[in-house]
Amino acid sequence: MVPYSKYAELEEKLKQAGGGAPSAPEYTFYYVSHGGPADPWWAPVIKGSQDAAKLLNVKVVYSGPEKFSVQALVDLLNSAIAARPNGIILTITDYNALDQPARSAISQGIPIIAVNVPDPRPANQRIPYLSYVGQNEYDAGYYLAKYLVDKGYKPKRVVIGIHEVGHIGLETRAKGITDAITQAYPGTPVEKLDITTDPTKAAEAFKSYLTAHPDTDVIFTLGPLGAHPALQVLREMKLTGKVHLLTIDIDDTILKAIDAGELDAAVSQQPYAQGF
Image (cartoon, rainbow, N blue to C red; front, top):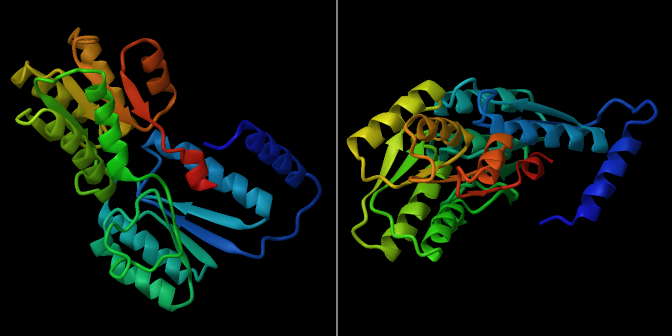
């Protein structure tokens, strides 16, 4: 956790950076992400990158697809490489698809920093980026589920809503959740549910699952795109307080739900810092 004094210091520097007429940015960096405007989690990430650009007097170009698509992410990366920036910040949501273009960028002298989702392969096999900024996805899922286990709750059936199937980071979170539950309570059903990034379809998926499996007493979601419709469905089905809801990532809606007792717990991975 960053001490409050550090945030105050950063705010003061940003104010100072806003004064006067800055010279034209000398460096340009591309932030190539799988997260588009439809996902509210990415708003503070973008804000963080903009604040860093202002502080350092550099140009940051953020690009993300309208909807989650590995091919769209590859296309955005190739476009970024063609622009010959001074560096690229990249979410490695599918290392198989991104391996070749990322290595091509590095071979052309364009350094890469991985953010939000790393290449999970061993160091001698992964894309040779400079560093990784982000959380450990497995631990995020594991310890979120362990929070429930440590409170002594034994679930009858668990469902994990995954809004971007194939996203290595989300799949790894789901693996952590599954391991924590099944290690503590072997034989407990734990299923992944494809809810898509469409809130209406996500709500329908949760409602159908809960109707088909009325013994479900725990829902895990992997981001606001899952948490918001899950909250809606639990309210509509009058299951709030009867079905435990836990999520990874936070926003105002999730924090208010925790305060209201509608959501048990959430993991924050500091999105602003991942942009900055």
